[in-house]
Length: 334
Ligand code: NAD
Ligand code: UFG
Image 1 (cartoon, rainbow, N blue to C red):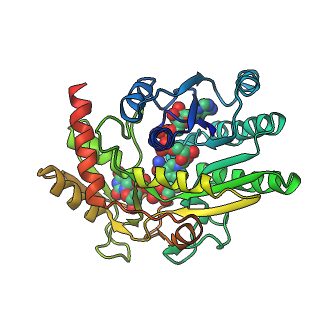
Image 2 (image 1 turned 90 degrees about the horizontal axis):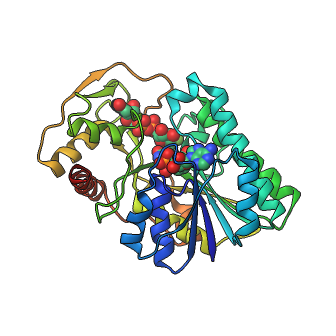
Image 3 (image 1 turned 30 degrees about the horizontal axis):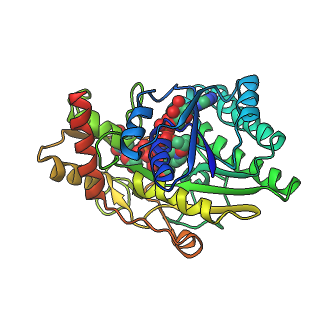
Protein backbone atom coordinates (compact mmCIF):
# COMPACT_ATOMS: atom_id res chain seq x y z
CA UNK A 1 0.00 0.00 0.00
CA UNK A 2 1.02 3.63 -0.42
CA UNK A 3 0.67 5.07 3.06
CA UNK A 4 0.86 8.72 4.06
CA UNK A 5 2.00 9.42 7.61
CA UNK A 6 1.13 12.89 8.83
CA UNK A 7 3.56 13.81 11.60
CA UNK A 8 5.71 10.90 10.45
CA UNK A 9 9.07 12.39 11.45
CA UNK A 10 7.84 12.55 15.05
CA UNK A 11 8.45 10.03 17.81
CA UNK A 12 5.69 7.49 17.17
CA UNK A 13 5.40 8.15 13.43
CA UNK A 14 9.07 7.45 12.74
CA UNK A 15 8.96 4.11 14.57
CA UNK A 16 5.80 3.20 12.67
CA UNK A 17 7.39 4.19 9.34
CA UNK A 18 10.14 1.63 9.98
CA UNK A 19 7.71 -1.21 10.65
CA UNK A 20 5.67 -0.35 7.54
CA UNK A 21 8.70 -0.11 5.24
CA UNK A 22 10.00 -3.42 6.58
CA UNK A 23 6.73 -4.99 5.42
CA UNK A 24 7.13 -3.57 1.92
CA UNK A 25 4.73 -0.63 2.09
CA UNK A 26 5.49 2.63 0.27
CA UNK A 27 5.66 5.24 3.00
CA UNK A 28 5.41 9.00 2.49
CA UNK A 29 5.72 11.48 5.32
CA UNK A 30 4.29 14.97 5.70
CA UNK A 31 5.36 17.10 8.65
CA UNK A 32 5.99 20.78 9.32
CA UNK A 33 9.00 19.79 11.49
CA UNK A 34 7.64 21.81 14.40
CA UNK A 35 8.55 19.03 16.84
CA UNK A 36 10.87 16.79 14.84
CA UNK A 37 13.99 16.91 12.75
CA UNK A 38 14.59 16.24 9.06
CA UNK A 39 17.57 13.97 9.93
CA UNK A 40 15.05 11.35 11.10
CA UNK A 41 14.50 10.47 7.43
CA UNK A 42 18.13 9.33 7.01
CA UNK A 43 17.85 7.28 10.18
CA UNK A 44 14.69 5.60 8.94
CA UNK A 45 16.59 4.77 5.74
CA UNK A 46 19.51 3.36 7.72
CA UNK A 47 17.26 1.09 9.74
CA UNK A 48 14.62 0.10 7.19
CA UNK A 49 16.59 0.40 3.93
CA UNK A 50 14.37 3.00 2.32
CA UNK A 51 13.96 6.75 2.72
CA UNK A 52 10.34 7.87 2.75
CA UNK A 53 9.35 10.61 0.34
CA UNK A 54 8.99 13.74 2.45
CA UNK A 55 6.63 16.71 2.19
CA UNK A 56 7.37 19.68 4.44
CA UNK A 57 3.80 20.89 4.74
CA UNK A 58 1.65 22.23 7.54
CA UNK A 59 -1.76 20.63 8.10
CA UNK A 60 -3.17 24.16 8.07
CA UNK A 61 -1.76 24.88 4.60
CA UNK A 62 -4.83 23.92 2.56
CA UNK A 63 -3.22 24.50 -0.84
CA UNK A 64 -0.09 22.55 0.05
CA UNK A 65 -2.16 19.66 1.38
CA UNK A 66 -4.38 19.64 -1.70
CA UNK A 67 -1.36 19.59 -4.02
CA UNK A 68 0.21 16.71 -2.10
CA UNK A 69 -2.99 14.66 -2.31
CA UNK A 70 -3.47 15.52 -5.98
CA UNK A 71 -0.03 14.10 -6.76
CA UNK A 72 0.04 11.20 -4.28
CA UNK A 73 -1.95 8.03 -4.79
CA UNK A 74 -2.50 7.16 -1.17
CA UNK A 75 -4.36 4.04 -0.10
CA UNK A 76 -4.31 4.97 3.57
CA UNK A 77 -3.43 7.84 5.90
CA UNK A 78 -2.11 7.44 9.43
CA UNK A 79 -2.71 10.75 11.16
CA UNK A 80 -0.08 11.35 13.84
CA UNK A 81 0.43 15.08 13.33
CA UNK A 82 -0.63 17.25 16.22
CA UNK A 83 0.55 19.29 19.14
CA UNK A 84 0.72 17.28 22.36
CA UNK A 85 2.00 19.40 25.25
CA UNK A 86 -0.77 19.26 27.84
CA UNK A 87 0.45 22.25 29.89
CA UNK A 88 0.93 24.46 26.83
CA UNK A 89 -2.57 23.58 25.66
CA UNK A 90 -3.98 25.11 28.84
CA UNK A 91 -2.08 28.35 28.18
CA UNK A 92 -2.70 28.46 24.42
CA UNK A 93 -5.99 26.65 23.83
CA UNK A 94 -6.76 28.28 20.48
CA UNK A 95 -3.43 27.16 19.05
CA UNK A 96 -4.33 23.56 19.98
CA UNK A 97 -7.87 23.68 18.64
CA UNK A 98 -6.70 25.31 15.42
CA UNK A 99 -3.76 22.99 14.83
CA UNK A 100 -5.23 19.67 15.96
CA UNK A 101 -8.92 20.06 15.12
CA UNK A 102 -8.60 22.56 12.24
CA UNK A 103 -5.66 20.62 10.80
CA UNK A 104 -7.61 17.35 10.94
CA UNK A 105 -10.57 18.94 9.15
CA UNK A 106 -8.23 20.07 6.35
CA UNK A 107 -6.82 16.57 6.14
CA UNK A 108 -10.27 14.98 6.04
CA UNK A 109 -11.37 17.35 3.28
CA UNK A 110 -8.43 16.10 1.20
CA UNK A 111 -9.10 12.44 1.95
CA UNK A 112 -12.72 12.93 0.89
CA UNK A 113 -11.83 14.87 -2.27
CA UNK A 114 -9.14 12.42 -3.36
CA UNK A 115 -11.06 9.33 -2.35
CA UNK A 116 -8.69 8.08 0.34
CA UNK A 117 -11.13 6.25 2.56
CA UNK A 118 -8.84 4.46 5.02
CA UNK A 119 -7.73 6.52 8.01
CA UNK A 120 -5.96 5.63 11.24
CA UNK A 121 -5.96 8.27 13.97
CA UNK A 122 -3.58 8.70 16.93
CA UNK A 123 -5.87 9.22 19.88
CA UNK A 124 -5.05 9.01 23.53
CA UNK A 125 -6.11 7.51 26.83
CA UNK A 126 -6.80 11.10 27.83
CA UNK A 127 -10.25 10.89 26.14
CA UNK A 128 -11.47 8.66 29.00
CA UNK A 129 -11.23 11.50 31.52
CA UNK A 130 -11.73 10.34 35.09
CA UNK A 131 -13.77 7.10 35.05
CA UNK A 132 -13.29 6.47 38.75
CA UNK A 133 -11.62 3.13 37.93
CA UNK A 134 -8.07 2.41 36.77
CA UNK A 135 -8.69 -0.15 34.02
CA UNK A 136 -10.04 1.45 30.86
CA UNK A 137 -12.06 -0.28 28.15
CA UNK A 138 -13.07 1.06 24.76
CA UNK A 139 -16.81 1.05 25.36
CA UNK A 140 -16.60 3.45 28.32
CA UNK A 141 -18.18 6.83 27.73
CA UNK A 142 -15.54 9.36 26.71
CA UNK A 143 -15.26 13.12 26.79
CA UNK A 144 -16.41 13.70 30.37
CA UNK A 145 -13.97 15.23 32.82
CA UNK A 146 -11.13 15.87 30.38
CA UNK A 147 -8.93 18.40 32.16
CA UNK A 148 -7.10 20.15 29.31
CA UNK A 149 -7.64 21.48 25.76
CA UNK A 150 -5.18 18.95 24.27
CA UNK A 151 -7.37 16.11 25.55
CA UNK A 152 -10.48 17.91 24.29
CA UNK A 153 -8.98 18.07 20.79
CA UNK A 154 -8.46 14.29 20.80
CA UNK A 155 -12.05 13.72 21.88
CA UNK A 156 -13.41 16.22 19.33
CA UNK A 157 -11.44 14.60 16.52
CA UNK A 158 -12.80 11.18 17.51
CA UNK A 159 -16.34 12.61 17.29
CA UNK A 160 -15.60 14.25 13.91
CA UNK A 161 -14.31 10.94 12.58
CA UNK A 162 -17.47 9.16 13.74
CA UNK A 163 -19.60 11.76 11.91
CA UNK A 164 -17.50 11.45 8.75
CA UNK A 165 -17.95 7.66 8.78
CA UNK A 166 -21.68 8.11 9.39
CA UNK A 167 -22.00 10.46 6.41
CA UNK A 168 -20.01 8.23 4.06
CA UNK A 169 -20.18 4.52 4.85
CA UNK A 170 -17.23 3.78 2.58
CA UNK A 171 -14.84 5.26 5.13
CA UNK A 172 -12.78 2.75 7.11
CA UNK A 173 -11.55 4.55 10.22
CA UNK A 174 -9.51 3.13 13.07
CA UNK A 175 -8.98 5.14 16.23
CA UNK A 176 -6.02 4.00 18.32
CA UNK A 177 -5.99 5.20 21.92
CA UNK A 178 -2.39 5.17 23.01
CA UNK A 179 -1.43 4.85 26.62
CA UNK A 180 2.07 6.11 27.58
CA UNK A 181 4.66 5.45 24.87
CA UNK A 182 8.25 5.05 26.08
CA UNK A 183 11.54 3.66 24.80
CA UNK A 184 13.39 3.94 21.53
CA UNK A 185 14.29 1.88 18.52
CA UNK A 186 16.77 -0.89 19.53
CA UNK A 187 19.22 0.42 16.90
CA UNK A 188 19.68 3.51 19.09
CA UNK A 189 19.17 5.70 16.03
CA UNK A 190 15.73 7.12 16.73
CA UNK A 191 13.77 7.86 19.86
CA UNK A 192 11.97 10.69 21.57
CA UNK A 193 13.90 13.89 21.04
CA UNK A 194 11.41 16.70 21.53
CA UNK A 195 12.24 20.29 20.64
CA UNK A 196 12.14 22.46 23.80
CA UNK A 197 11.41 21.53 27.40
CA UNK A 198 9.63 18.18 27.73
CA UNK A 199 6.49 17.62 29.80
CA UNK A 200 6.31 13.86 29.99
CA UNK A 201 7.99 11.60 32.49
CA UNK A 202 10.34 9.66 30.23
CA UNK A 203 11.89 12.57 28.29
CA UNK A 204 12.34 14.37 31.61
CA UNK A 205 14.11 11.32 33.08
CA UNK A 206 16.36 11.32 29.99
CA UNK A 207 17.25 14.98 30.45
CA UNK A 208 17.91 14.48 34.17
CA UNK A 209 20.28 11.64 33.34
CA UNK A 210 22.23 13.84 30.90
CA UNK A 211 22.34 16.70 33.41
CA UNK A 212 20.23 19.05 31.25
CA UNK A 213 17.61 19.05 34.00
CA UNK A 214 18.86 19.02 37.59
CA UNK A 215 16.35 16.58 39.05
CA UNK A 216 13.06 14.88 38.41
CA UNK A 217 10.16 16.40 40.26
CA UNK A 218 7.76 13.65 41.22
CA UNK A 219 4.25 15.05 41.26
CA UNK A 220 2.85 13.65 44.48
CA UNK A 221 3.51 10.54 46.57
CA UNK A 222 0.22 10.53 48.42
CA UNK A 223 -2.00 8.85 45.82
CA UNK A 224 -3.81 5.65 46.65
CA UNK A 225 -1.39 3.55 44.59
CA UNK A 226 1.27 0.92 45.19
CA UNK A 227 3.81 3.47 46.51
CA UNK A 228 1.81 6.71 46.48
CA UNK A 229 3.11 7.95 43.09
CA UNK A 230 1.04 8.06 39.90
CA UNK A 231 0.57 4.82 37.95
CA UNK A 232 0.43 4.66 34.13
CA UNK A 233 0.53 2.04 31.40
CA UNK A 234 3.93 2.54 29.73
CA UNK A 235 4.13 0.88 26.33
CA UNK A 236 7.33 0.40 24.32
CA UNK A 237 7.14 2.55 21.19
CA UNK A 238 8.13 -0.40 18.97
CA UNK A 239 5.16 -2.40 20.29
CA UNK A 240 2.99 0.65 19.65
CA UNK A 241 4.33 0.93 16.08
CA UNK A 242 3.51 -2.74 15.51
CA UNK A 243 -0.02 -2.03 16.75
CA UNK A 244 -0.46 0.23 13.71
CA UNK A 245 0.70 -2.53 11.40
CA UNK A 246 -1.80 -4.92 12.97
CA UNK A 247 -4.56 -2.31 12.73
CA UNK A 248 -4.12 -1.55 9.03
CA UNK A 249 -4.44 -5.24 8.18
CA UNK A 250 -7.89 -5.32 9.75
CA UNK A 251 -9.46 -2.08 8.55
CA UNK A 252 -13.21 -2.25 8.12
CA UNK A 253 -16.06 0.08 7.23
CA UNK A 254 -17.21 2.45 9.95
CA UNK A 255 -15.20 3.36 13.03
CA UNK A 256 -13.19 0.84 15.08
CA UNK A 257 -11.56 1.85 18.34
CA UNK A 258 -8.70 0.10 20.13
CA UNK A 259 -6.66 0.73 23.25
CA UNK A 260 -2.95 0.26 22.65
CA UNK A 261 -1.41 -0.42 26.03
CA UNK A 262 0.15 -3.30 27.95
CA UNK A 263 -2.60 -3.81 30.50
CA UNK A 264 -0.14 -3.25 33.35
CA UNK A 265 0.54 -0.11 35.36
CA UNK A 266 3.88 1.12 36.70
CA UNK A 267 4.42 3.87 39.26
CA UNK A 268 6.75 6.85 38.84
CA UNK A 269 9.09 5.36 41.47
CA UNK A 270 9.08 2.03 39.63
CA UNK A 271 10.05 3.87 36.42
CA UNK A 272 12.86 5.65 38.28
CA UNK A 273 14.10 2.32 39.68
CA UNK A 274 13.98 0.70 36.23
CA UNK A 275 15.98 3.56 34.72
CA UNK A 276 18.54 3.36 37.53
CA UNK A 277 18.87 -0.40 37.01
CA UNK A 278 19.45 0.01 33.27
CA UNK A 279 21.87 2.94 33.58
CA UNK A 280 23.66 1.84 36.74
CA UNK A 281 23.36 5.43 38.00
CA UNK A 282 21.21 7.13 40.62
CA UNK A 283 18.58 9.47 39.23
CA UNK A 284 18.18 12.61 41.34
CA UNK A 285 14.59 13.37 42.23
CA UNK A 286 12.42 15.19 44.74
CA UNK A 287 8.79 14.72 45.58
CA UNK A 288 6.70 17.86 45.05
CA UNK A 289 2.96 18.53 45.10
CA UNK A 290 0.47 16.87 42.77
CA UNK A 291 0.16 18.21 39.21
CA UNK A 292 -3.27 19.64 38.45
CA UNK A 293 -5.39 17.31 36.33
CA UNK A 294 -3.36 14.15 37.04
CA UNK A 295 -5.16 10.91 37.82
CA UNK A 296 -3.83 8.47 40.42
CA UNK A 297 -3.81 5.32 38.32
CA UNK A 298 -4.85 4.32 34.81
CA UNK A 299 -4.01 1.42 32.56
CA UNK A 300 -5.45 -0.13 29.42
CA UNK A 301 -7.59 -3.15 29.06
CA UNK A 302 -5.93 -4.19 25.77
CA UNK A 303 -7.97 -7.37 25.18
CA UNK A 304 -9.99 -5.97 22.25
CA UNK A 305 -6.81 -5.31 20.25
CA UNK A 306 -5.57 -8.80 21.02
CA UNK A 307 -8.88 -10.41 20.10
CA UNK A 308 -9.60 -8.45 16.93
CA UNK A 309 -6.18 -7.38 15.66
CA UNK A 310 -4.09 -10.25 16.98
CA UNK A 311 -1.78 -7.70 18.59
CA UNK A 312 -0.38 -7.47 22.07
CA UNK A 313 2.55 -5.65 23.63
CA UNK A 314 5.57 -7.89 24.03
CA UNK A 315 8.38 -5.68 25.27
CA UNK A 316 8.96 -4.74 28.91
CA UNK A 317 9.79 -1.56 30.77
CA UNK A 318 13.34 -2.90 31.16
CA UNK A 319 13.55 -3.22 27.35
CA UNK A 320 12.35 0.37 27.04
CA UNK A 321 14.92 1.61 29.54
CA UNK A 322 17.81 -0.29 27.90
CA UNK A 323 16.82 1.03 24.47
CA UNK A 324 16.52 4.57 25.85
CA UNK A 325 20.01 4.43 27.32
CA UNK A 326 21.37 3.12 24.03
CA UNK A 327 19.63 5.99 22.24
CA UNK A 328 21.07 8.53 24.70
CA UNK A 329 24.57 7.20 23.94
CA UNK A 330 23.96 7.70 20.22
CA UNK A 331 22.63 11.23 20.80
CA UNK A 332 25.77 12.08 22.79
CA UNK A 333 28.03 10.92 19.97
CA UNK A 334 26.16 12.79 17.24
P1 NAD B 1 5.61 14.17 18.10
O1 NAD B 1 5.49 15.59 18.49
O2 NAD B 1 6.95 13.52 18.22
O3 NAD B 1 5.11 13.96 16.61
C1 NAD B 1 4.06 14.74 16.06
C2 NAD B 1 4.56 15.34 14.76
O4 NAD B 1 3.52 16.15 14.20
C3 NAD B 1 5.78 16.23 14.95
O5 NAD B 1 6.81 15.78 14.09
C4 NAD B 1 5.29 17.62 14.55
O6 NAD B 1 6.30 18.39 13.93
C5 NAD B 1 4.11 17.29 13.63
N1 NAD B 1 3.10 18.34 13.55
C6 NAD B 1 2.46 18.97 14.57
N2 NAD B 1 1.58 19.87 14.06
C7 NAD B 1 1.68 19.81 12.70
C8 NAD B 1 1.05 20.50 11.64
N3 NAD B 1 0.15 21.47 11.85
N4 NAD B 1 1.38 20.17 10.37
C9 NAD B 1 2.32 19.21 10.13
N5 NAD B 1 2.95 18.53 11.09
C10 NAD B 1 2.63 18.83 12.37
O7 NAD B 1 4.52 13.36 18.93
P2 NAD B 1 4.31 11.79 19.09
O8 NAD B 1 4.61 11.44 20.49
O9 NAD B 1 4.96 11.07 17.99
O10 NAD B 1 2.73 11.73 18.94
C11 NAD B 1 2.10 11.38 17.72
C12 NAD B 1 0.60 11.47 17.93
O11 NAD B 1 0.23 10.59 18.98
C13 NAD B 1 0.10 12.86 18.33
O12 NAD B 1 -1.13 13.09 17.69
C14 NAD B 1 -0.09 12.73 19.81
O13 NAD B 1 -1.05 13.62 20.30
C15 NAD B 1 -0.54 11.28 19.94
N6 NAD B 1 -0.28 10.72 21.28
C16 NAD B 1 0.97 10.78 21.80
C17 NAD B 1 1.20 10.31 23.10
C18 NAD B 1 2.56 10.42 23.73
O14 NAD B 1 2.65 10.37 24.96
N7 NAD B 1 3.64 10.54 22.98
C19 NAD B 1 0.15 9.72 23.83
C20 NAD B 1 -1.11 9.64 23.23
C21 NAD B 1 -1.31 10.15 21.95
N1 UFG C 1 5.32 12.81 36.33
C1 UFG C 1 6.11 13.25 37.36
N2 UFG C 1 7.04 14.22 37.08
C2 UFG C 1 7.19 14.76 35.84
C3 UFG C 1 6.37 14.30 34.79
C4 UFG C 1 5.43 13.32 35.08
O1 UFG C 1 6.01 12.80 38.49
O2 UFG C 1 8.04 15.65 35.67
C5 UFG C 1 4.33 11.75 36.60
C6 UFG C 1 2.89 12.21 36.41
O3 UFG C 1 2.41 12.81 37.56
C7 UFG C 1 2.21 10.88 36.04
C8 UFG C 1 3.30 10.11 35.30
O4 UFG C 1 4.54 10.70 35.70
O5 UFG C 1 1.87 10.18 37.20
C9 UFG C 1 3.18 10.18 33.80
O6 UFG C 1 3.11 11.56 33.40
P1 UFG C 1 3.25 12.00 31.88
O7 UFG C 1 3.17 13.48 31.83
O8 UFG C 1 4.44 11.36 31.28
O9 UFG C 1 2.00 11.30 31.20
P2 UFG C 1 0.44 11.46 31.46
O10 UFG C 1 -0.08 10.11 31.79
O11 UFG C 1 0.13 12.56 32.37
O12 UFG C 1 -0.07 11.89 30.02
C10 UFG C 1 0.50 11.35 28.83
C11 UFG C 1 0.41 12.37 27.73
C12 UFG C 1 -1.00 12.58 27.33
C13 UFG C 1 -1.63 11.26 27.00
C14 UFG C 1 -1.49 10.28 28.13
C15 UFG C 1 -2.02 8.95 27.70
O13 UFG C 1 0.98 13.60 28.13
O14 UFG C 1 -1.03 13.37 26.21
O15 UFG C 1 -0.13 10.15 28.49
O16 UFG C 1 -2.20 8.14 28.80
F1 UFG C 1 -2.93 11.45 26.74
